[in-house]
Amino acid sequence: MKSIAKLFRTAVFAVATAALAVAVAFPVTSCRAPAAASQTLLPQALGWAAVAAGGVHTVAVTAGGQLWAWGFNEFGQLGDGTNESRNLPTRIGSAGNWASVAAGTVHTLAVTTDGQLWAWGENERGQLGLGDNENRNEPVRVNLPDGTPANWVFVAADGAHSLAITADGQLWAWGENERGQLGLGDNISRNEPARVGTMSDWIFAATGDSHSFAITAAGELWAWGWNNFGQLGDGTWTDRNAPVRIGIGAATNWAYVAAGGAHSVAITVEGEIWAWGLNASGQLGDGTEVMRNAPVPAGAPAGVAWASVSAGGVYTIAITTEGEMWGWGNNELGQLADGTTDDRNLPVRVAQGAGTAAAGTAAARWMAVSADWAHTAAITATGELWLWGHNDFGQLGNGTWENSYEPTRIN
Image 1 (tube, rainbow, N blue to C red):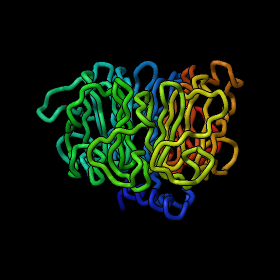
Image 2: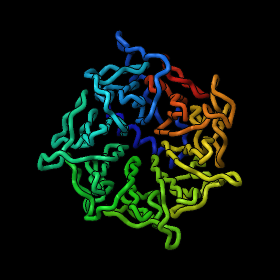
Image 3: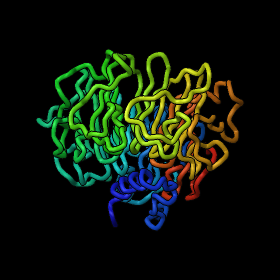
């Protein structure tokens, strides 16, 4: 079967050239695997602390440090020791010290509370960082090239490449590099971590399909990789294989950044949201479908300050400082959860979902969100996990293979 990662990259080009609906751009229904006979059932009232949506799989960490995964698993990206897809969450291992997780198209990375980094899934491009190109269906520890264990504090993954930051602020990259998305000054893929530049004050990173971002402690935003649609935001359409600084004038006040299929979104310390790149489905949220190669302000509702954002394939989901969730862009598969399947080029409020408390109460306040090609996962302030959108591979974890146009709760 053709690599699912290649199918997704092909889909981005299809959207760019013909503004195809996601349902058309992802002709992969025939690849669906049956649910495994032995699904692990979740305990009731399990509180969730972190979640990552991959291409068509999902991985999440509980408040107690347990790691769970579900969805497409042909490349072992769930990490359960099999290659069988799951439409219900299954626990990965027995450890209870997982802290954070990142999901690429068909690979997964996770960090423990003591700074260990583990990887599993597809490894054709070296995106696991293990020094070889063999797939893994169970977690394997990632170390520095000389075998030294690093103290990892942050990890990001998308497409077929990965970024990670150590406790001393170093940025490392590995995996596919055809577009320069590793930021190493060349276009040679790596199957083990390679340090990006010499700076040691990196605090945040984000990966798109084939482009990357990182933010320094001083609030500087840097970008590199694929730029055909202006997704780097440097005012050009030229790919970059080394970091270039992105700003609004001399701005050094960036707090958060997210990279999608071919668009990007970032938030300043003042809570302003800016976007650039491909905009065929309105994923920049500026009220147009005009592609941009430099940051433009999204059409935020009056008085709103933004706290975090996640960029899906051709849509965007963001959370305000008040815990409200808003979405814009492609909505063919219900990934905006606004009660319709209409694309939006301005932010619309994401539905709260059946059974959640009314807006403004603690249970309705969203804490975290992760969007990928066409499904979304989000956690409330009370630790509830909700998912919606595309579900052909069981990535919503609700025991079905049916798409959901409104949030559905896990457990």
